[in-house]
Structures are given as C-alpha cells and as structure tokens.
Length: 414
Image 1: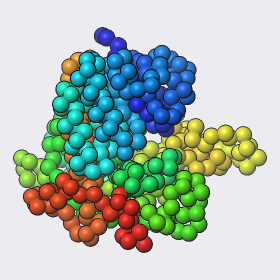
Image 2 (image 1 turned 30 degrees about the horizontal axis):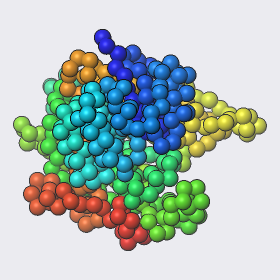
Image 3 (image 1 turned 90 degrees about the vertical axis):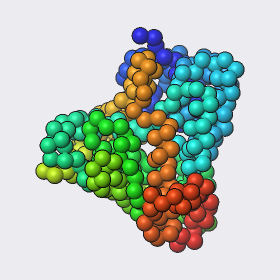
Image 4 (image 1 turned 60 degrees about the vertical axis):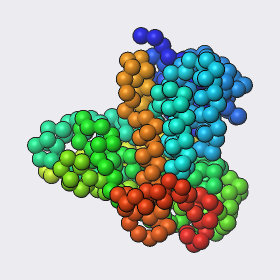
C-alpha cells in the first residue's frame, strides 16, 4: 500500500511526546513536514532520530500542504480556525491533501467547532478527530470480550471516567481566554467521550446513544489558593486572582438508547490537582452481571529511587506523563503511547485513507463532544440540569461562551 506523507502543524508536547512515538511504532505513514512558530527544529530532529521520515521544516501552511497527504493540527486552540482556513485555501489551489487531523478539543465553543466542520466539508477532505482514550486497547478489548454478555444480559448502564494530573505544561493551557476554559475544556472532553463510548453497545456507531441531559459542577480547589496562585503567576504569567479557570470538575451525562428508550448514565471527574504519581486514568463500566475496570497507574513495572540516587534523575516524565516526583516507589509505563491509545488512533488514520473507509471519529463527532462540554459549563453556571432535548436550550448553546472562558471566572469560582 502507498505510504502516506503526514505534516504536523504545531510541535508542542503532544506532537513530540506521543504522535512522533506513535509513528515510530507503525508502518504506512511518514512524517515529512512540520510548520510551527516554535519547536520545529526539535521535532524534525526527533523525527530523524526515531526514523519516522525525513521531516522538512516549512515556512508556511500552504507549502506544507503541497507536500503532504495528511495534515495534523496540533497547534493551540485559539488558532485552529485560521489554520484550517489556510489548509482549505491550499486545497482549492491544488494541494492534494486527503485528510486533516485535529487534536482534541475540536473547538472552544460550538460555533468554533461547527466552523471547522464547515471548512472541511467545503474543502471536500476527510477528517479525523483525535480523542486518543477511545482507542485504548484496554477499553476496546474489554468491550469486545464482554459483547456476548451485553447481548445476553443487556448493555452497560453506568460508565465512570476520570483523568487527573497536576496541571498542564504550556502557559496558554492555564489561560481560560486562550484555552476555552479550564480542566473541563482540557480533559473533560476526554472523559465525556469515553463515558459515551463505554455505554455504546459494541458494534454500534459512536453516536448511537442520544444525549438527553447534562449535570455538572466546576470548582477551583487548589490553584486559587494564594500560595499556588503566586507559583502559577511566576511560572506561566497567568494570574488566577483575576482570570481563574476551574481545576476540578465533575458531572454526568444521561443518554437514551434510540431503539429501547432505556436511559444510561456516564459520570466524569477531572482535575489539575492530582499530586501523586503522575497522570491517572480511571474508567469503569457496570452492566447487569458484569463489570470492566481500568486504572493506568497499575503498571507491570515499578522502580524505587532513594534520596541519595534521586539527583541522577533528569526528567521525571520519562517514567510517566505529568510525573511530579523523582524518588520513592514510582509506577513506570513501558509504552504510554500505546497504553493511552495514540498508536491506534494514528493507525485508524492510515487504514481509513489507504482503504477508503470511514474513520472511527471524525469532526462531526468532535462537534458533538464540544456540545456536551459546553452544556456542562452551562449547567455549572446555572446550577441546574441542562435539557438537551429542549429546542430553546439547544439554540442557546449554539452561541454560548462560558463565563470562565470570557475571563469572568472569579465571579463563579471564588
């Protein structure tokens, strides 16, 4: 089969740490170009080191598109519409781009996500929404193994998903006016999507279940305290005394089976205040007579580093994403890229384009996740359940922008 040439727009943490590593573990895609305001040289060197392709640094998106079959948007949230407009223009000018990838979240608001979908449709290009956790082998193997039980006993009725760590790397992630909110926008999109997926009967489309309602809360539990506000301001330049974002959220989404009318529930919890081993993903699904559970901190590998040896550690994140300690008993994941689903989502891109198949997750799905995230923000603001079957509410959500994303979070969070 033809090898696909992929270009990256953006060279930040997720591009360097996971997506390059994913390409190194598969065949069929080569990283042949990058365009980024910063980090291009480092990413190109990393591509060469990992033998994933001869990655050339381009000075414009238009030039990148001329040399790539697939463009992956890994740039910060505020610039994605501008980027997609340039990609669409390049396609109109003759660039033979077959597919465009966008890292989660698709948009900071519903209108932003919808605009991206419209641009892709106008350009006539295949789209891929990168929500890596849905591709986790642990999830899909469990669902496939339990499919006979689902058919015999009934589907999963309660799903719970959590993602927690000590906070993002880049300053713009902390700025709600740039990122689109706080931990709900950043990580709630993961957990809401995973909950929906766990509840969906195996073999059914990812949007088979219909969202009925959302109930959520947002809080500032750690980074609003004076000590941590000062630390955050010094480290990132973001002042949570003036424009805070939530560092904790929880809630639930109720879905309806379109055939039976049965209601099922997905609970989500997310935080930027988990000061333990590093990134933790917890998922479970409960059905009649069966259960699945996933905890990514249960690793087959553990290491112990005493105080005397701790100074030898250069980077604690070589052990685990978002690790905050370099001594004591540490959980080490031998292959985080595969564990978290990054490898399988990249394989899905390759297979969909090479075999002319529909991807598992496209931008239309990403738009639906954006709707649920924004409904969760609206629920937290109003202190009530948001009814997703109500036409007036759906119309309100179309133009909704959360108070936190407007920089008015102090009124809500303090």
